[in-house]
Length: 341
Image 1 (cartoon, rainbow, N blue to C red):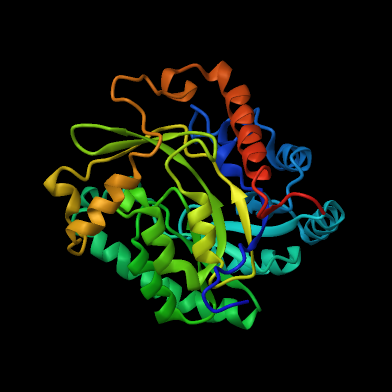
Image 2 (cartoon, rainbow, N blue to C red):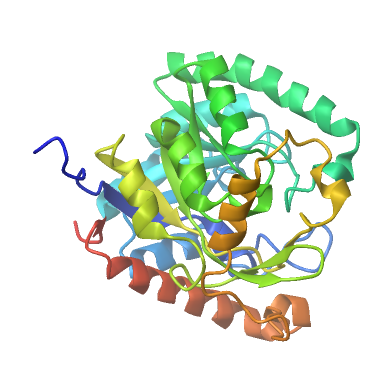
């Protein structure tokens, strides 16, 4: 290939994670704890993945924790027969001991563990006040402890940009912790930390080990903007540009479809206090974020509430399933994404 030629688009093995189907699967409800006891659970998750021809299945760690060794072995065989690559989805808080996740991943034959780092949403560090610095230090120490364990086991923790850390901060974590740590790049979650998706992709690309394919339609407000859930491909995220950047560093990657949360995320970056806890950002970088957010934007007067936000729980299952099916169809139409065995 001539030196001036663009690299080939990487082959993405596409599948599902459960976070775009939280009500249908039982992870979200109105009761305490917030769950839907009538949810479809792991079996229902595998059923919709099989319907859509998923090649990757990112599985919620608490589901796996409920299985014994025989159950994990049976699940491993089942996924292999379906041609699905397993990824384990865990977090530093609220999803059980992370050390147990290493054993689960090995039993399942997974090589990547997606790892959420914090409960921060909407980039709102200010809500944490001085505790933000303490939280960051706790996370840093945990990653220094866990990354060598993953490397020794032949695994990688892929830390997600879960509306909390910037691209530069995630890269710094990876450089600090070594080969047991990579990045799970959530394509929609650049906006909540005031970064344009392509800028974010450029910085994290060498460290990406897994992708969450998320999209948002953006609705500007007097305080910033709201990120409104939509089918992947209908919003502001420039997927072809992102994959072109990733192609410079990777031949193939696993990826999963993840429509956004049932509650819109309000990023109040036009208020001075929102920036507490952030390093200074240049005017061109912020301008790039705001310009990118204008693609397919929602007019301010549109009522873009989801059925969850309207209290219309009876519509939620059909709503979630229709959106994940539309997302899968849109991604299958792109030639650089693998959809067949």
